[in-house]
Length: 193
Image (tube, rainbow, N blue to C red; front, side):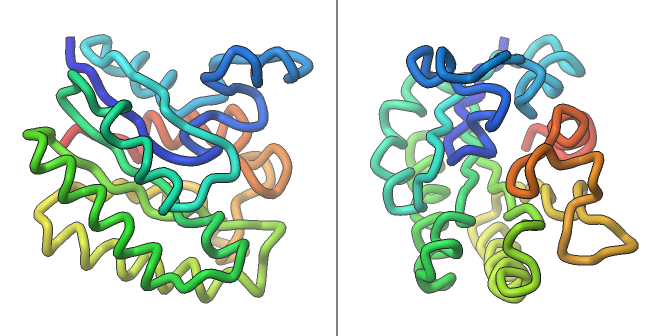
């Protein structure tokens, strides 16, 4: 088995259909474990066991505070986040540096590390499109500089006919993927470093 620590925000958690926290999950009308990219990645590769450390609404600085606990005993660390920084009007350069810091810490812990870029945000379009693209370009630079893998989540869900947005069937609410969106992330965008 390969233990993968998935650290991030609501996209990692599986919102709106899933949350790794049982207390939060009880508030979901019909929880569905398929509402996680981790579910689909593990189904594709049975060697993978995921520790879902996603927390709804967290910025990159908040996510960083949970890294040590999430990564303990893992083989691989996935770092995902940044949309909540953008939603709160925080500088994308700071979010990129926070994500770089998490990637570096994962490497210091001896883990294989993946950075996931930021998804298109239908409800934030068009205002958030520029900051998302800027942050994703910075994340690609971070991945190259730190020699970690980049998971191209944005590309996997962007609608070719409506750039900057997810295709309607790939989003549940304009903020998060649908089950089909999560399936695409787990089957097409996820790969081990």
